[in-house]
Amino acid sequence: MAVCEVCGNDYDKAFQVTMQGRTHTFDSFECAIHALAPTCAHCGTRIIGHGVEQAGKIYCCAHCAQKEGASGLKDRA
Image (cartoon, rainbow, N blue to C red; front, top):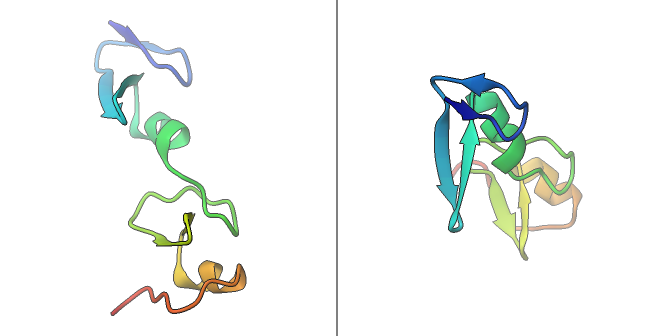
């Protein structure tokens, strides 16, 4: 069995995610999101979708980007 690096659960159905050359072990998607998903530069929520990016910052949506001064970003084309 493998141990989740977030919660420490020793689980027979654990899985691994390789990101930026490092391999991580988790027992649930919840733990993987907690460890790996970026946070919105405005509201701090975990971004599990595409999000929007500008000037090296990532936001959960165009509204949050606009609140931080980013311009020209849209949630939909």
